[in-house]
Image (cartoon, rainbow, N blue to C red):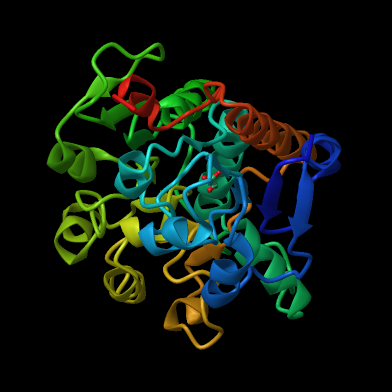
Length: 326
Ligand code: GLV
């Protein structure tokens, strides 16, 4: 029997890719940069499955261009805001993601960003390399304490709670804002958004991106934060209004920010944000531990193969398609 045809939109770790190669006829996009949308449209024509990344826009036009034989879309990410989910559901196409396995790596990274911004690790590195380190000084590169501070977590799902677990080792007081979470496994105090922003020394974002959360952090919400507060974002760039953040950091309305995600990505080299000393920035690498990326590729492959086989995806974000009348 002919193997199913799949398009894989970037080189992924062998852990998952070997499985895909063994079972499918694979068209692999090997460039470092993502395929442009027009190329995506061309390459998905006639495929049975698509293994894509968060950098690929997967919309209704693309699904229709692929054709009605398209059986599965497997995203190599836990977030799936790059995919038009209602369009996939309307076409009964299951969409897979990679939850759970990247929780620890992402929470580790969020906590390291938090500490780096507070204790000015990156600034310190620049200071030394620029030859500014003349002596030990009582007032050089001072920052706020992490231990004992209040951490406000927006989005108290798996990753938000994993961050709280780490923070509890630093005796931090945990506030969280998440209308969907009732009885979390990791203790914290549920508050409204305004209370969280007013009372927190650190605010860390762990929400999905949707129309309710786009620019949740904006001029008005930034104005509620303490002048010594630090904002950490490892969720999605557009949850923060970048211009408003720039203005708040530049005017020292908050102490610092640490971003693993930006809008757009990559951040253009002439972005004013890059001129700020009180910003720590990383290139969307919160889940980038080697074992985690291996597991993500494996889970993405397993979702893809299950979909091609007509089975329910092990991790499906639109499981309602399985109860839709065919
Ligand atoms: C990374 O941002 C992911 O959603 O997996």
